[in-house]
Image: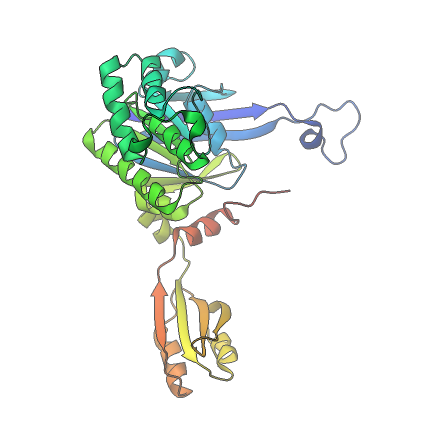
Length: 340
């Protein structure tokens, strides 16, 4: 198989700052330890795959993307993208890839949106007529067709972000790296972006997308496979369904009942009921009970308890473990958290 991305024992170290390099108990003159952003990553991504990278802040995602897009040299190890070495063949590789970072602003204010996309097409050697055709298609896709003649400096922040996303596809790259592509976009714009990514992949079998996102629902919806990265190491790689199957997270239950005194203590006493919490619904005069039913425990026990107490549920729903449940179980902290 020809891989879109091949990474072997990839390592990246940074010189420590005064704050990060001094360890407790270090003596004057001791050489500070380097900061390890990537600690020997192995990774393969198939051609035609939409591959997700998930990790908390500071996990190493951005460093990995910078190496794969030739913006940063590795300290050790190898990486190939589209069959080319990211260090020795960087110039050739740049013509085959694109990087889109959400919230980033690219372009010149005096140019129109259409001219901006045409200009980026010229950077990649796209014939002028074809560059304009692609520009028109991409502007339609991101909802900026009516702004084709507007100068970039007149666009709102959200419109600039959509234009930046379109810029990444004007060269028709083999591999696109999307770093938080829907950051700051409204719901409709984000939906259009996700739809375009799926269509773009389906049009040609050798196209590949590597996605980082803090929106776990977005990763769950889009990605064929996902790697969870933390402290510069890959902790798990699988399909979204496969990742959920790995974690014995049980089932999440939401129980809505009318007032029932003592129900919380009764539920808490049941074996296998974890993370119990309640939320009053004063407008309906009911209470929502949220809890996790540990794997191996039976919902029948809960229903028997309710029947014995004469409680008739207003509503009862159960949910399989979410990708967020899986992420927290593997990493031990949320996406937004970072160690102090």
